[in-house]
Image (tube, rainbow, N blue to C red; front, side, top):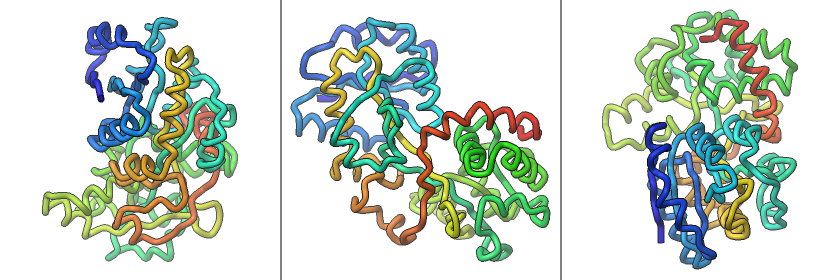
Amino acid sequence: MLQRNRLVAPLAVVLAGSAFATTVMAEEVNLYSARHYDSDETLYQAFTEQTGIKVNLLEGESDQLIERIQREGVASPADVMITVDAGRLWRAEQEGIFQSVESDVLDERLPESMRHPEGKWFGFSQRVRAILYNPENIDPSEITSYEDLADPQLEGEVCIRSSNNIYNQSLLASMIEHHGAEAAEEWAQGIVNNMARDPEGGDTDQIKAVASGECDLAVANHYYYVRLLESDDAAEREVAEKVDILFPNQGDRGTHVNVGGAGVVEGAPNRENAIRFLEFLASDEAQKIFAAGNYEFPVVEGVKLSETLESWGEFKKDDLNVSILGENNPEAIRIFDRVGWR
């Protein structure tokens, strides 16, 4: 049985809670989730059917949930917090939200790059930050890396969203780790110099800008492109048909990968159930549901991909431990400020 509480604004976080907080029972698990996909309900129901553990769900934005858990303190009913992007998981970690977990199942099922070194959180789906391009104007053999986007020859050709966006912060954090802060700053300055316009909108808007001719290149998470490809709206499918996708850095470290992840909350009243839930997320059944809900890649090898993802074939992904993306986040933000990336 799934008990749902949905939060959509800070005021709702303050007002929505007492009934949820009074339902702590032995065979249940309380999830605080920043994911908002309908397929997740199927996931929770499958967990209950397999284990008999009832799922109580509270939804909100990541920062709202962190604030709520902090305000609830030792009385918090939260067992698991789920969110997206290693940067947000790191922020929750820094606020003391997560506790360390030891699990042979998670160690065996999840790649090392998807596990926090101290077991404080784990990645359960992969989000690839790809390059989208206009095939009429761009030869993909000439754009093979993120670094290429900073080439002065591409002045006025790049669309990318704001530096406030956590996806871009994590991408720059990976550049810091691979190249050092100084080289990463040079790259960020190069991107600013090559922007076709001031950053605006989300990832989908960057893809649409390529389709409309406003720019020839964009950076976006892969699933935004798949949403357009598989949209019920003919106009959105037409946008996707004008754009192609490439996965950069195949000749070296691989394409940058981020995560949808979760951890057990410090002081979780149903700790063992929480760990069982995380272990369930690493199962083949759950991996397929968890990833397919947003066209993401599963983290466990061998899990069947969606038809579109399967059609792209295999490509190399950066195996940098995703916890480093959070650790380098403050420096990434400072670099963005210095180069004037709005």
